[in-house]
Image 1: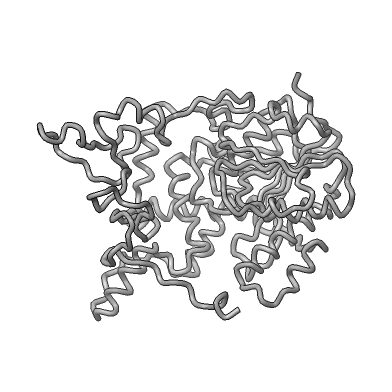
Image 2: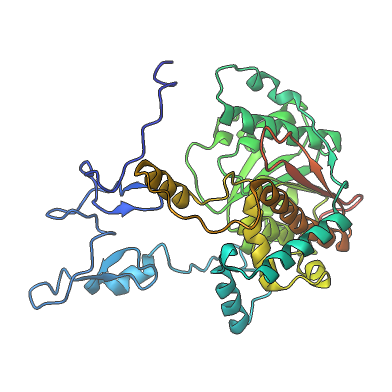
Length: 436
């Protein structure tokens, strides 16, 4: 028990020597590569630095991989490497994989470059007229369409009463259990725990939500219901592996952008579909909505998505473009809004790198100059929150245009998570048209 409660090992710094590992520093993970170095080298095969061509090293010359320059390859083996590199574009023969079927309309090269340029914008560099103009538009849309329209729907499910009673669980574990309990409580409240239903979890990750949903289905002895878990990664330590009845769960490895639901054989076994997710980052939420709404051969009866990470929304995939454009929001303003949303949950409003720089400068008694803040912290948090809800309302309008009753609810208190809004949508008396 003492070991379990011990403090986490501090992260390494680039100045520390790697212990029998590759000497490549992985900046994103703040550690050295864990692969073993090649004989006579400090680096593994993937991170061996490029070498200049000479008459002596023709067999050992390494060059950056054309598909992913983050790693290098032997020049003499380049042709073979391009056929097996993990960065290559792979063509799937699976019937339910259709490349970019849910990605949204492909942008013209000029518009794509324009949006890429917008992504480089920094909020503190915007002129006052543009900066305050976007904020005023957000406030107007929020007051007109959203203010006072989001109700509380905070429920629990009996399946999680026992795990939530464990006092030894830390705050992070309890937070996720409370969220899962609330989402299952909503499914039960809306009478969505039924026979003959496929529960499709998008971005399933390690499967905690699926584990407790499967437990609830098994406890209630619901006939011919199943969970279909969709994730583009193959993760270790999946919680659904611990289920006694493993036949309840099927895993599909696929990018949501490429998934055609009506071609999934697993969905042919049931009459109803329920789409759900506990954590879909930004654009993945829009890809999911495109996936479940864009396939006429397989209609989804009910949608439950706990919303988060709006800063990762993209103009191409976002489903609410039509509503935003009708409201006078341009693609450039959309990008600015996706940058402002982080104000709602990021505390000080500074990036991790900026906070680190500030801490180091403070220790040196030379605080760096911060960009002039045109708004105080409370104002930024409020505007960031309103930006989130504007993006969510565009999603509601898209769902309603496709025949769904759609709404936003506060499903847990803010002291559990600041990302405490769930999107709900349903259509009654519809069935999945089985693919021939």
